[in-house]
Image (cartoon, rainbow, N blue to C red; front, side):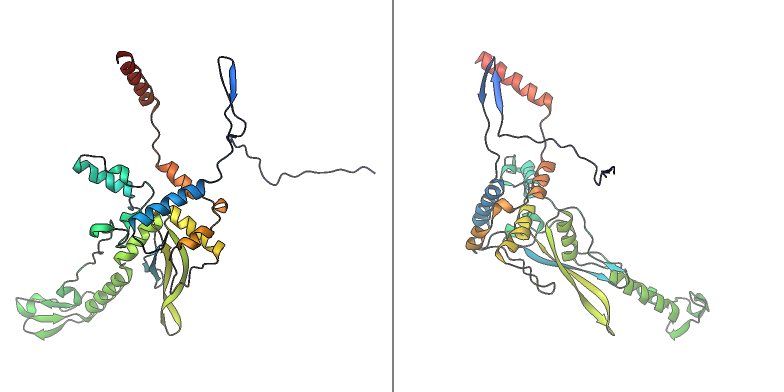
Length: 320
Protein backbone atom coordinates (compact mmCIF):
# COMPACT_ATOMS: atom_id res chain seq x y z
CA UNK A 1 0.00 0.00 0.00
CA UNK A 2 1.38 3.39 -1.00
CA UNK A 3 1.08 6.25 1.46
CA UNK A 4 0.71 9.73 0.05
CA UNK A 5 1.31 12.78 2.26
CA UNK A 6 -0.02 16.20 1.28
CA UNK A 7 1.34 19.45 2.70
CA UNK A 8 -0.90 22.51 2.73
CA UNK A 9 0.43 26.01 3.21
CA UNK A 10 -1.81 27.77 5.75
CA UNK A 11 0.15 31.03 5.81
CA UNK A 12 2.39 32.68 3.29
CA UNK A 13 6.01 32.86 4.40
CA UNK A 14 7.48 36.18 5.49
CA UNK A 15 11.05 37.42 5.25
CA UNK A 16 12.36 39.76 7.93
CA UNK A 17 15.74 41.35 8.56
CA UNK A 18 17.08 41.65 12.11
CA UNK A 19 20.32 42.89 13.60
CA UNK A 20 22.05 40.44 15.91
CA UNK A 21 24.54 42.29 18.08
CA UNK A 22 25.75 39.13 19.81
CA UNK A 23 28.03 38.09 16.90
CA UNK A 24 29.54 41.23 15.44
CA UNK A 25 33.11 41.58 14.19
CA UNK A 26 34.80 44.74 12.94
CA UNK A 27 37.91 44.66 10.78
CA UNK A 28 40.35 47.33 9.65
CA UNK A 29 43.35 46.67 7.39
CA UNK A 30 43.27 42.95 8.09
CA UNK A 31 42.98 43.34 11.86
CA UNK A 32 39.65 42.13 13.30
CA UNK A 33 38.22 42.37 16.79
CA UNK A 34 35.02 41.34 18.51
CA UNK A 35 32.55 44.20 19.02
CA UNK A 36 29.58 42.06 20.01
CA UNK A 37 27.43 42.84 23.00
CA UNK A 38 24.25 41.30 24.39
CA UNK A 39 20.90 42.63 23.20
CA UNK A 40 19.45 45.33 25.43
CA UNK A 41 16.55 43.89 27.46
CA UNK A 42 16.25 46.86 29.83
CA UNK A 43 14.96 49.47 27.38
CA UNK A 44 11.48 49.50 28.89
CA UNK A 45 12.84 49.83 32.41
CA UNK A 46 15.27 52.56 31.38
CA UNK A 47 12.77 54.82 29.61
CA UNK A 48 10.14 54.22 32.31
CA UNK A 49 12.58 55.12 35.10
CA UNK A 50 13.70 58.25 33.26
CA UNK A 51 10.12 59.40 32.69
CA UNK A 52 9.19 58.56 36.29
CA UNK A 53 12.01 60.80 37.50
CA UNK A 54 10.84 63.59 35.18
CA UNK A 55 7.25 63.35 36.43
CA UNK A 56 8.36 63.33 40.06
CA UNK A 57 10.34 66.51 39.46
CA UNK A 58 7.71 68.34 37.41
CA UNK A 59 4.35 67.38 38.88
CA UNK A 60 5.13 67.70 42.56
CA UNK A 61 5.24 65.25 45.42
CA UNK A 62 1.75 63.72 45.27
CA UNK A 63 3.33 60.26 45.32
CA UNK A 64 1.72 59.12 42.04
CA UNK A 65 3.51 58.14 38.84
CA UNK A 66 1.98 57.89 35.35
CA UNK A 67 -1.45 59.07 36.49
CA UNK A 68 -4.20 59.88 34.01
CA UNK A 69 -7.52 61.70 33.72
CA UNK A 70 -10.97 60.23 33.25
CA UNK A 71 -12.77 61.65 30.22
CA UNK A 72 -16.03 60.81 28.51
CA UNK A 73 -18.12 61.50 25.42
CA UNK A 74 -21.74 60.98 24.39
CA UNK A 75 -23.50 59.55 21.37
CA UNK A 76 -26.98 58.34 20.50
CA UNK A 77 -30.41 59.64 19.49
CA UNK A 78 -30.51 57.42 16.44
CA UNK A 79 -27.13 58.60 15.19
CA UNK A 80 -27.93 62.32 15.40
CA UNK A 81 -25.41 62.89 18.22
CA UNK A 82 -21.89 61.50 18.06
CA UNK A 83 -19.31 63.33 20.14
CA UNK A 84 -16.96 60.33 20.32
CA UNK A 85 -15.00 60.81 17.13
CA UNK A 86 -11.22 61.08 16.91
CA UNK A 87 -9.46 64.21 15.71
CA UNK A 88 -6.00 65.65 15.31
CA UNK A 89 -4.60 68.85 16.75
CA UNK A 90 -2.82 67.61 19.87
CA UNK A 91 0.74 68.92 19.95
CA UNK A 92 3.67 67.65 21.96
CA UNK A 93 5.62 69.68 24.50
CA UNK A 94 8.52 69.75 22.04
CA UNK A 95 6.35 71.30 19.35
CA UNK A 96 4.90 73.93 21.71
CA UNK A 97 8.30 74.85 23.14
CA UNK A 98 9.68 75.07 19.61
CA UNK A 99 6.98 77.61 18.74
CA UNK A 100 7.77 79.59 21.88
CA UNK A 101 11.48 79.46 21.07
CA UNK A 102 10.95 81.27 17.79
CA UNK A 103 9.84 84.35 19.72
CA UNK A 104 12.46 84.30 22.49
CA UNK A 105 15.62 83.47 20.59
CA UNK A 106 15.64 79.66 20.53
CA UNK A 107 17.06 77.06 22.86
CA UNK A 108 13.85 76.16 24.67
CA UNK A 109 12.94 73.21 22.46
CA UNK A 110 15.43 71.00 24.26
CA UNK A 111 13.27 71.19 27.38
CA UNK A 112 10.18 69.83 25.64
CA UNK A 113 9.81 66.07 25.43
CA UNK A 114 8.91 64.88 21.94
CA UNK A 115 6.43 62.33 23.21
CA UNK A 116 4.77 64.18 26.09
CA UNK A 117 1.42 65.90 25.50
CA UNK A 118 1.17 67.94 28.71
CA UNK A 119 -0.02 70.99 26.82
CA UNK A 120 -3.01 69.08 25.43
CA UNK A 121 -4.62 68.84 28.88
CA UNK A 122 -6.30 71.21 31.32
CA UNK A 123 -4.92 69.40 34.39
CA UNK A 124 -3.34 72.06 36.61
CA UNK A 125 -0.53 69.67 37.47
CA UNK A 126 0.17 68.99 33.81
CA UNK A 127 -0.27 72.49 32.46
CA UNK A 128 1.45 75.21 34.45
CA UNK A 129 0.77 78.95 34.26
CA UNK A 130 -2.82 78.39 33.15
CA UNK A 131 -1.92 76.99 29.70
CA UNK A 132 -5.18 75.75 28.18
CA UNK A 133 -5.83 72.83 25.85
CA UNK A 134 -5.40 73.59 22.18
CA UNK A 135 -8.51 73.65 20.05
CA UNK A 136 -10.85 73.25 23.00
CA UNK A 137 -12.89 76.34 22.34
CA UNK A 138 -16.61 76.16 22.92
CA UNK A 139 -18.62 75.04 19.90
CA UNK A 140 -20.61 77.73 18.20
CA UNK A 141 -24.26 76.90 17.62
CA UNK A 142 -26.47 79.00 15.36
CA UNK A 143 -28.54 81.63 17.13
CA UNK A 144 -32.09 81.47 15.83
CA UNK A 145 -33.71 84.82 15.30
CA UNK A 146 -37.03 85.91 16.69
CA UNK A 147 -38.78 85.57 13.37
CA UNK A 148 -37.71 81.97 12.78
CA UNK A 149 -39.96 80.75 15.54
CA UNK A 150 -43.01 81.49 13.41
CA UNK A 151 -43.43 85.00 14.77
CA UNK A 152 -43.12 87.90 12.37
CA UNK A 153 -43.71 91.61 12.49
CA UNK A 154 -45.34 93.47 9.65
CA UNK A 155 -44.76 97.21 9.47
CA UNK A 156 -47.52 97.65 6.91
CA UNK A 157 -50.15 95.71 8.82
CA UNK A 158 -52.10 92.74 7.48
CA UNK A 159 -51.41 93.53 3.84
CA UNK A 160 -47.66 92.95 4.32
CA UNK A 161 -48.08 89.33 5.47
CA UNK A 162 -49.30 86.44 3.27
CA UNK A 163 -52.47 84.63 4.22
CA UNK A 164 -50.73 81.26 4.39
CA UNK A 165 -47.53 80.13 6.05
CA UNK A 166 -44.54 78.07 4.88
CA UNK A 167 -46.47 74.82 4.42
CA UNK A 168 -49.74 76.32 3.32
CA UNK A 169 -51.12 76.54 6.86
CA UNK A 170 -52.92 79.52 8.32
CA UNK A 171 -51.15 82.59 9.70
CA UNK A 172 -52.73 84.08 12.83
CA UNK A 173 -52.73 87.79 13.60
CA UNK A 174 -51.72 88.58 17.19
CA UNK A 175 -52.33 92.30 17.04
CA UNK A 176 -49.97 95.30 16.91
CA UNK A 177 -48.40 94.06 13.69
CA UNK A 178 -47.36 90.60 15.02
CA UNK A 179 -48.30 87.38 13.21
CA UNK A 180 -47.82 83.72 14.10
CA UNK A 181 -47.31 80.70 11.81
CA UNK A 182 -47.63 77.46 13.88
CA UNK A 183 -46.00 75.31 11.19
CA UNK A 184 -42.91 77.51 11.05
CA UNK A 185 -42.80 77.37 14.82
CA UNK A 186 -42.85 73.55 14.85
CA UNK A 187 -40.11 73.34 12.21
CA UNK A 188 -37.92 75.88 14.03
CA UNK A 189 -38.24 74.03 17.32
CA UNK A 190 -37.37 70.74 15.63
CA UNK A 191 -34.28 72.30 14.02
CA UNK A 192 -33.08 73.72 17.33
CA UNK A 193 -33.62 70.39 19.09
CA UNK A 194 -31.53 68.63 16.43
CA UNK A 195 -28.79 71.27 16.66
CA UNK A 196 -28.73 70.93 20.44
CA UNK A 197 -28.46 67.14 20.17
CA UNK A 198 -25.57 67.43 17.72
CA UNK A 199 -23.59 69.95 19.78
CA UNK A 200 -20.56 68.62 21.66
CA UNK A 201 -18.93 69.94 24.80
CA UNK A 202 -15.36 71.35 24.71
CA UNK A 203 -14.24 68.46 26.92
CA UNK A 204 -15.54 66.00 24.32
CA UNK A 205 -13.65 67.82 21.57
CA UNK A 206 -10.52 67.63 23.69
CA UNK A 207 -11.05 63.89 24.21
CA UNK A 208 -11.22 63.51 20.44
CA UNK A 209 -7.74 65.05 20.17
CA UNK A 210 -6.37 62.80 22.91
CA UNK A 211 -7.79 59.70 21.22
CA UNK A 212 -6.44 60.88 17.88
CA UNK A 213 -2.97 60.93 19.48
CA UNK A 214 -3.49 57.40 20.91
CA UNK A 215 -3.29 58.65 24.48
CA UNK A 216 -6.47 57.02 25.83
CA UNK A 217 -7.59 53.63 27.15
CA UNK A 218 -11.24 52.68 26.64
CA UNK A 219 -12.82 51.74 29.98
CA UNK A 220 -16.36 50.99 28.81
CA UNK A 221 -19.74 52.50 28.02
CA UNK A 222 -23.08 52.84 29.75
CA UNK A 223 -26.54 54.18 29.04
CA UNK A 224 -26.64 57.74 30.35
CA UNK A 225 -30.16 58.69 29.29
CA UNK A 226 -33.29 56.53 29.06
CA UNK A 227 -36.88 57.24 28.09
CA UNK A 228 -39.54 54.62 28.85
CA UNK A 229 -36.86 51.97 29.24
CA UNK A 230 -35.20 52.71 25.89
CA UNK A 231 -31.62 53.99 25.85
CA UNK A 232 -31.39 57.27 23.96
CA UNK A 233 -27.85 58.30 24.88
CA UNK A 234 -24.70 56.27 25.53
CA UNK A 235 -21.62 57.60 27.30
CA UNK A 236 -18.15 56.19 26.59
CA UNK A 237 -15.54 56.43 29.36
CA UNK A 238 -11.79 56.67 28.82
CA UNK A 239 -8.61 57.05 30.85
CA UNK A 240 -6.27 59.43 29.05
CA UNK A 241 -2.58 60.07 29.68
CA UNK A 242 0.00 62.65 28.69
CA UNK A 243 2.12 60.19 26.72
CA UNK A 244 1.84 56.87 24.90
CA UNK A 245 4.45 55.52 27.30
CA UNK A 246 2.25 56.32 30.31
CA UNK A 247 -0.74 54.66 28.63
CA UNK A 248 1.26 51.50 27.85
CA UNK A 249 2.63 51.21 31.39
CA UNK A 250 -0.90 51.53 32.80
CA UNK A 251 -2.45 49.09 30.31
CA UNK A 252 0.20 46.42 30.84
CA UNK A 253 1.39 47.24 34.35
CA UNK A 254 -1.96 47.37 36.14
CA UNK A 255 -2.86 43.72 35.40
CA UNK A 256 0.54 42.64 36.76
CA UNK A 257 -0.12 44.08 40.21
CA UNK A 258 -3.88 43.51 40.31
CA UNK A 259 -5.10 47.07 39.70
CA UNK A 260 -8.25 47.63 37.66
CA UNK A 261 -9.84 50.43 35.65
CA UNK A 262 -12.96 50.89 37.74
CA UNK A 263 -16.35 51.10 36.02
CA UNK A 264 -17.50 53.19 33.05
CA UNK A 265 -19.57 55.28 35.47
CA UNK A 266 -16.57 55.79 37.77
CA UNK A 267 -13.25 55.12 35.98
CA UNK A 268 -10.09 54.58 38.00
CA UNK A 269 -7.37 56.40 36.06
CA UNK A 270 -4.85 56.86 38.84
CA UNK A 271 -1.23 55.91 38.36
CA UNK A 272 1.17 54.00 40.59
CA UNK A 273 2.72 54.61 43.96
CA UNK A 274 6.48 54.19 44.19
CA UNK A 275 5.97 50.78 45.81
CA UNK A 276 3.57 49.65 43.06
CA UNK A 277 5.89 50.98 40.36
CA UNK A 278 8.74 48.85 41.70
CA UNK A 279 6.59 45.70 41.42
CA UNK A 280 6.14 45.98 37.64
CA UNK A 281 8.09 43.54 35.46
CA UNK A 282 9.29 45.90 32.73
CA UNK A 283 10.88 43.08 30.73
CA UNK A 284 7.35 41.84 30.00
CA UNK A 285 6.13 45.18 28.60
CA UNK A 286 5.56 45.55 24.87
CA UNK A 287 6.72 49.06 23.96
CA UNK A 288 6.38 48.66 20.19
CA UNK A 289 3.68 51.35 19.99
CA UNK A 290 5.90 53.75 21.93
CA UNK A 291 8.96 52.98 19.79
CA UNK A 292 6.96 53.40 16.57
CA UNK A 293 5.73 56.78 17.80
CA UNK A 294 9.29 57.92 18.48
CA UNK A 295 10.60 56.65 15.14
CA UNK A 296 7.76 58.31 13.22
CA UNK A 297 8.61 61.62 14.88
CA UNK A 298 12.34 61.27 14.28
CA UNK A 299 13.80 63.39 11.49
CA UNK A 300 16.88 61.67 10.09
CA UNK A 301 19.65 63.90 8.72
CA UNK A 302 20.16 64.09 4.98
CA UNK A 303 23.28 62.49 3.51
CA UNK A 304 24.30 65.83 1.98
CA UNK A 305 24.11 67.52 5.38
CA UNK A 306 26.31 64.83 6.95
CA UNK A 307 28.89 65.12 4.16
CA UNK A 308 28.89 68.91 4.43
CA UNK A 309 29.35 68.74 8.19
CA UNK A 310 32.27 66.29 7.83
CA UNK A 311 33.93 68.49 5.20
CA UNK A 312 33.52 71.56 7.38
CA UNK A 313 35.02 69.86 10.43
CA UNK A 314 37.90 68.50 8.34
CA UNK A 315 38.57 71.98 7.01
CA UNK A 316 38.51 73.47 10.50
CA UNK A 317 40.94 70.84 11.77
CA UNK A 318 43.26 71.48 8.82
CA UNK A 319 43.53 75.20 9.40
CA UNK A 320 43.50 75.01 13.19
